[in-house]
Length: 598
Ligand code: GLC
Image (cartoon, rainbow, N blue to C red; front, side):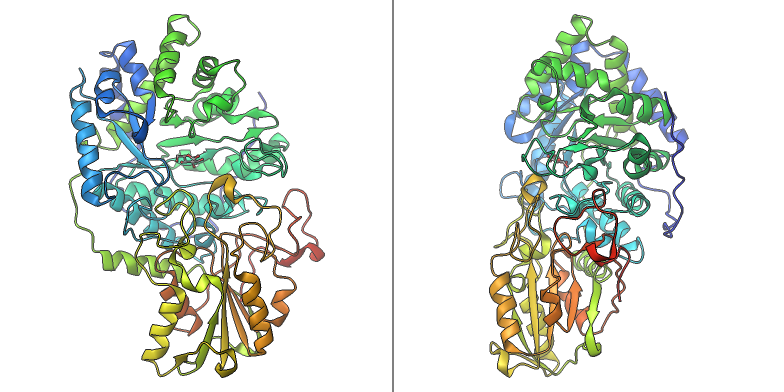
């Protein structure tokens, strides 16, 4: 088998030196955990082993199923929250689940997983940190580390100990709906920030899940099976050399750094679904790189594979190297398929034992076996909000500043236009309270941009006016509507195209007509096409998706309380049609190059 020398990650970022993590991933701790896992495995029946390989979604199971099937894990899909979605409701739910697990013959706790990708974003009132595309613009990884560690502490407070993060995707085509989950188009930056995020989660006491292995951000436009004609879950068509360089290197580096869990990608590599790709899931990830944790499938991804029926697909994926099946709804069928495969000799006993050993090893290593419910720890919310605001301040990229209009003076009159001015939900983006996020009332704290600007100006002798002709400066706040995954795939990335806020066009027109110095702020998960409009703006700031504290952060940057330090982690194209794979970075296709920022 041809092996490619993977480029060592140059430490182009100072990856912060970390104290010993709350979850230590040292080799000796792995050895200890593996020995305990082996001792427990030796006592287990095949039915108990099959149960440990199953992850069901909370809405599609009864708590008593945990006892009956010895379930290994339960998840909350995006927006799936118990009761009134309070900390107590979460803890009560998970306490009941762990009590059910304690009734199994060997009392093996479940591990509960959520997509806490920028704070405990399923939880009402959560502090929401910037999404990864903004964090990747930051000059240092400190904000990324803080975001991850506070996310870990927040989920543990609710009894959850596993988050499906960080995403290590290298988004090579910004038309992809998950670009905002990627730290950069550059694999080295994605690795550096992704590994710091993983360490932050471990430091905070949460099991991380590096995802989606591999090539999720490199699919060719038009190859999506999920949304025909688009990208998400499509086919990454590359030479093996390029695939390793762009989409595997960061995983190898993360495995060397103690990765606990890998989530397989829905996407394919040259036509073969990653979920059934034994070469990568087993031969490279486990045998060549020595990954000792476990691989989880993505949400109901098994059914997309090439087997002739669901049972065949389960057998195909387990044999390829999937250790735990995230089968939210069909989990009973998956459970029976594992046992059928074992009984018929279609899945070897060694494969089942290996999968369960890996799962149990991570449960021991993470401390779950000794403490199924993390002790409740008070969290200083004000301190976390300040960390989120500082993280957001580091993400903003100043792309134009004619006549040094920025920083603004405190005692000016400002007219605020644009649909991104009046929604915290737009500042937070997808994966916020609901899977796709919400424009209106997303049940998180924080202020709108308009509220933050008004509060600041009125305190400093300035004013906000509704009449452009009375204003010294127009603040134009444009953006994208919240979205997630394939719902965010786009063909038209103009300010009026796919996933753009409906009010963008009118606001751009009104600002142009006003004929006043205009500062535009774009609140979006990725670059949008602004080649014409930017000509009438004096200043232009890319704010990404800065989170619940983003408005105060923006005010601090616009009025000079903090400097602009961000640099583009993605090339900014002139038109929607370019992507890193299909277009060489010719000057006429690039508005702002990768790494640009004033
Ligand atoms: C989704 C996503 C994955 C997420 C999982 C659980 O479809 O692809 O990133 O972790 O399902 O919500």
